[in-house]
Amino acid sequence: MTVTYAEKLARMPGYQAGVPTGQAPEAIAAGGIAQLASNESPRSPHPKVVEAIARAASSMNRYPDPDATLLRRRLADRYDSQPGNIAVGNGSCDLLLAAASALCEPGDEILYAWPSFSMYPYLPALTGAREVRVPLGEGDALDLDAMATEATAATQLLIVCNPNNPTATHHPATEIGAFLEKVPAHVTVILDEAYIEFQTNDDPDASLDLTADFPNLVVLRTFSKCYGLAGLRVGYAIGSSNFRAAVDTVRQPFSVNALAQAAGAEAILHQDDVLARVEATVAERIRVQEGVTELGLAVSESQANFSWIDLGDSDEAAVLAGLSAADIAVRAGAPLGDPGHIRVSYGTAEEDDRFLTALAPLLS
Image (cartoon, rainbow, N blue to C red; front, top):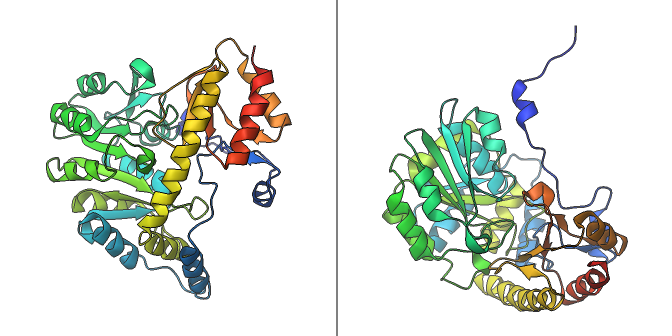
């Protein structure tokens, strides 16, 4: 008898990581590979965070705090919230998957823009809900009016990626607030803000004020990007206590490991370090965006730590192969929903110079 697997596996898109297959992290750290494919920070965590991780490492014979008490309390202090309103997870992806499991079942709808974060198509595939994809609007930005119009009585979950991945565009909090006014109150809206610290349209905390007026809003953030903790996988959601209880119910116990908890609890105390990282990233963003434009390519207005580049008449596969031969890793546009593009994270100044130099001769 042949073993059979759930039919939903056939609906899974298959996640393609930005790290090139077979490339060890130490090779990237040594500078041999310009890792510009995963929207990570090229800078190590704050020294105090590294110290906190080292201290926690001596207790790895014990399970982590199942409630992530210290991490949630410090997040609550940072954002003037209550620990009961904060859920933490093994990266923000863990919270997205849990939200879909807690909110959706066959007959429901999950609505999001496309192209957007490549994890979103997993959610309807896992839950049996129907996916509703809304095309992007002008300038590769989210079409918020169209998204609000598509929400129906069957919509359970609506995801707004802001800044959007992979296009790097951003809507100010005032536009998000106007959008929320149009969304039915029964719809849980997840505002996925993995890159919010890098935008310059608003104070990064402006969107959090909306949670007071919209009980159906959940703001999703991560330590993976501007805090430099991608390797530890810790994300968090700020919303209602009911949402936190729901996602905690459907997840495995101890979903955030002890090292990640210690790192996040320390990292949140160093907002000066976040500001320095953001300033350095914005400086590189300006250089890369201008450099790409000078090569004759169109690029969306980035408010994140990466660029979304339209290759025009150049062949995407040939450009990717040429960059790979130069030991530069970027993300292909086709798997992200728009062939003929590449997504390029900002690295160090040296890495970004390597990218621009290598890209020029590859263009048609």
